[in-house]
Length: 284
Length: 286
Image 1 (cartoon, rainbow over the protein chains, first blue to last red):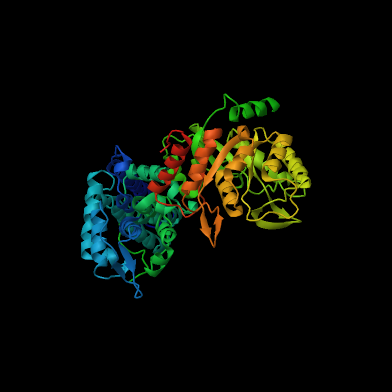
Image 2: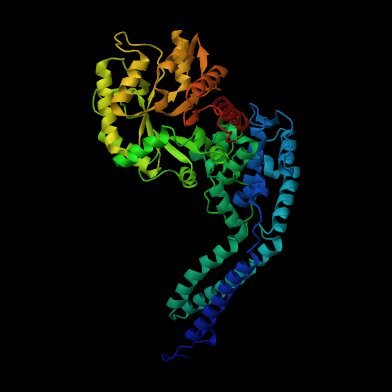
């Protein structure tokens, strides 16, 4: 009960509740960040040359960019094309040294599907799963367990926010002062949502690798109008992997347009965000 | 500055001249290929493509690893009747400084007249008046430059009717009066001789070969009986033979492959560089 004679909400004085509320929130936020710092550190590969373009693409832009990188490699090798119906088809054999994902995409084009449907193709999905598992083993992608665990803190934080919201409602109904609680909730709600949905796709080591790759392969940036004939299939693929589907338009604008590939430039922010599921294709 | 100029001239010509061997035109499109050439000691960049704030990182990296980078102007219009534009000259000289270039080069041609941009390098009439105009403009550029300037005669599909000098006289007069070096485009020599039905060796024998700063080698193709120095086709054997003939007379300190588009596979580009090395007797850079 306070000096005005009104009972405290839930019998707990406001300052006491705020201290408990903010302390718990601080523990959850710090705990989440510490957990990410430890579990998402990853391992830096000893030799960047061993990274395949589709691996780089997956780290940079998830499933869809990995698939478009494979498609770019196959197109540069003259192995795929598009028909008048905008469906992909094979125009040549699988190039030697192709990755499992390139093989799966080449197989899928034999079924004359659209570029936007590739990430949903069974064989391609299996290849993507293998690709991701390999990156997890190499310490470049966090494991599924680590990603799940990374959401525990934000979920608890959301629960705390819900508790605060209920307290806020009760406080308002009782005409109690709620200014500090509103401020705390205004900060914690977006924080918890960001932490919940922005679980990194790649480890910190992978982000470092991506930064190094962007410098190393700067000559493949579309701003340089790279001579893909000179850089070959691997160069074309690495260009798409690092600089996004804008590079695919640079490589073969007619093919990219006909395949209805959405033109995106990989920004270099090193993408966080959920999953790497399909979704940036305009096809389908 | 004068001392640096004289030192530069001695570096590029004379008995103890620094030799750079075979190089290639640095273009953003093939910058990754160029950077990976293990024996590279010399590249050329279009001067107007370099910002006055500094070269692009890939070019700066080459410079920093000791590769000589030569700015090659295409827009000064040295052969124009009007004085070269001071802003363009300042930028040209600034780029040479930024690149720590051993020399800079431009064309004996005009690209604008009366404020109208031609968009191409146009040939001058070989008259004494034209020599005077070129010499005056070259001196204006040299006044800003801290390194030697090399002048490149261009390929021409026609001769002006009022020519007073032949090509060798015209070039020699300009070089003598300005003290400039010669940037000899051997593919132009071949193209001009072929299109005019003259002997390219006769021209080589009359040019001051000891004043060559470096040589351009490029590909071309014939259309409707006329050979065009396209820079987008492979270097023909006849041009490589001319490189050998030139080097037999006086081997220049450097030869540079100019490729400006329709870039081939890396193996083909390396093959062209190797062919120039073989024709000139310089070590392969691939």
